Length: 408
Image 1 (spheres, one colour):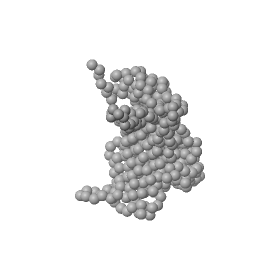
Image 2 (cartoon, one colour):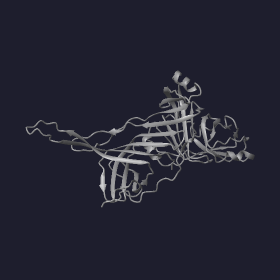
Image 3 (cartoon, one colour):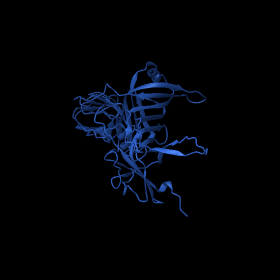
Image 4 (tube, helix red, strand yellow):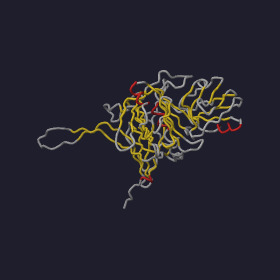
């Protein structure tokens, strides 16, 4: 009797292709941790719709072949950043550490760090970035070293923000040679130089020795949800071109191990809108949408020659306990504001994290509720490219920036 396949025995792996039509197999691929990963082969069909003397159906005609995929997982640093980079069309990259020298002072109140040399913006630092100071040597100010500091407001001379572990900044006079290093790597939707990445995915069912390979895949939508309690989650819609390849041996031989980073938790995260902390956030959701679809079939081939490429769109919502009119005022005035979110793994000083920053959003609707309970209001938002951003400014000229502490 054949033993049915088990989900725990499935190895789900991926690899970046060198180009369209070149499936990534063999070495250099990676296993992907997941909640579920379901990829399906499909084909368009059309009924023949003929009237015949025998009065019986003459069947169907086959058309374009394609693949679709859905990956659902818990969000963790270093696990999904390559897919986010492909969706935004720009690879993650490190930010050069800012050697601030002797001119930085620290204070317990805003702005927490001041640079008399005025070099914060010129160094490429931005609102929403998380970095760590080193070099503070005066008295208790050594506590400012090696802690994740999240920038919530920034000028050339002043850096405002919070330590993500909840520790207060310790005041210190200038005179220490200090450096600020952005953690992990950053990406954003670029103005030029867009990448055009294709990925191959394999579902290897080791218990029955069956392989399914899905090449030429792009990422149509990446959605992140951050609840008030419990794990943050990610859901990824994938659109492929070619037909799957079935086999009896593993195509992605010896794939690299899954990441082992902790899952980020909403309870340890924070949301800022218009440079102000939003209190009592119950949930947050964000969707990066590319509108990607297959171009379509052509005579002589059942496989689409490429994808229809849509622009980068970003939208979402957040729900809060209703405790004032600040957000309602923003909605009524139809003002554009900034939004920054960070979701953290734990309460340690150097915890892993994933963060998103949008320099220009519009709150598009406000939905109140009622009942014998605490009142909740939900605010929907849509992001747009921040035309006022750019080099040596507090925000990039982009629709969205993402930071992953474990991106490499």
